[in-house]
Length: 443
Image (cartoon, rainbow, N blue to C red):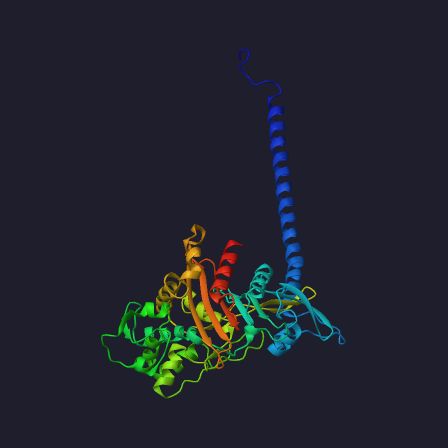
């Protein structure tokens, strides 16, 4: 055997050492994996036992309210009627401009915290407007049409006497606001379109019996349905009530728009009333709003604009967002649908007609400058006005219900303004509405 041809003397020992090293590494690897596996199993068992108990405790606490001692009164605000809520909170919703969005009350010796939907800055601004309006009485309600929350609810009396918030008083003549109801019925029951042509005699703001004839002569005025609505032509709506709608349809649509039925609100709200007579002239008066028997509250009037702006759907109005005892809520509000008086198609037609009221109708002068501003060109603006004197001609009821919605329907407000003027005519309701819309969207 030549030199270098055989294995070295320590070759077998070297191979044995390699094998022993491999076995040692494999053993260490198996021990590590076994230890890791046992540790993972132990951790999972710990989490299953401890975490499971915590979850059970959590759901047990969520399912069963915390127990109170026998001598501690239990607050059950879900069982409180609106009269009691009003008695507890009326001081905060009186005729002043400082209604907060968060305030305490006491019920059965329990201190409760009330969170409202009111925007304090808007509430104060509205009240200052009413103070400067030079009217005998005034009331404003501002709502969000998409969910029904009340953003401002202010009322004012010149004599300074304390009284219930006028926004909740259903005793004011609706006047031409009722034309929204009549127009809705004409669109849905008689298939009227905004561009339909009609005829009337005499002046638009009067309603004499000789103006209600069906005859057309050389003295008749031709007018589109949308213009008759925008300029509030009484004879057109009077004849509409007699010859097209009739008593039953008017009663039906008045009920759809929440007349003679309760409107559910956080505080007591007497029903708005309507009594449609049998005689033709009485029907004409009701359909045109040229009467003092159809009575409504400012809160209800704001819902007219909500129906049009919200595609025919009216959300239940609400002003109490949450009531809590310490940190535990005992009452929480949730948006609900109050009713759907008209279809979405009817709402679109009414939007055209209410926007015409802003363009060339009874609101054109008040909203002309606002509509020309670049920052407000992205708004859909619509309104309906109404005015009527009381029986003694000493007071004038001056109404507007309006909406301002962004073109993408992402945000908006609806509002109603009522002013009762005395001997001196104060700032008109449409001017107050314009100022509120300007302030709300600038803010």
